[in-house]
Image (cartoon, helix red, strand yellow):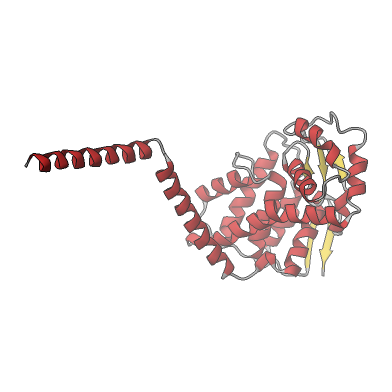
Length: 291
């Protein structure tokens, strides 16, 4: 009886200790809670990936992706020949330092730094590697300190190499194109909507701030239902463009918004939700055509 009593007490203490440990761990957001959260996130992402994989290629199809680069280049570089933009670099006075490459990577917005870091890991000793300390220092500013006078020439020279052009393509797809198309498909958008998301991601960045892509999308979702939730696609995209245009004008009422007004809005007003060619649009007053 006495032995049984000791065993009962010992068992009770063990159970209490275990309960306290689990409760404390959960209260602290410890490994158990974190593991469950990560597992849930992985499961949800896997389910979303499977849904996207079953959808039509849309903007990710080779011909449509080429078209997307042409339309973006008309606004970013005033040309349809986007392949010319690998070596492009200049400070356009927008407070983001140097803008460069196929989607306007910027020394002040972290994406150019990330590109050069990833490129250097794959190709040590490249012509841009020596500027990494300076790029880290100016990240988040419009400063050229440590970059002038040689960085622009080094960029143009590196852009003559297939490896660096490939690195720009990969980073464009990883940071901008792939995520934009994926989110658009999950929102139930067709090829035009996927392009609208992509162009906004390129111009505004993939952040969550009020003027970044995810912030613009969240504001749109509060005003209109996307097709994935039963909303009308044209109405939803119209709301997205309205919000994006307002963000572009915010703080600079005179800013040119023709990439929205006489390009993307034109495609939408024509009901071209599939972004089918032939296409005609205007950016900065210049007319572009793709047969």
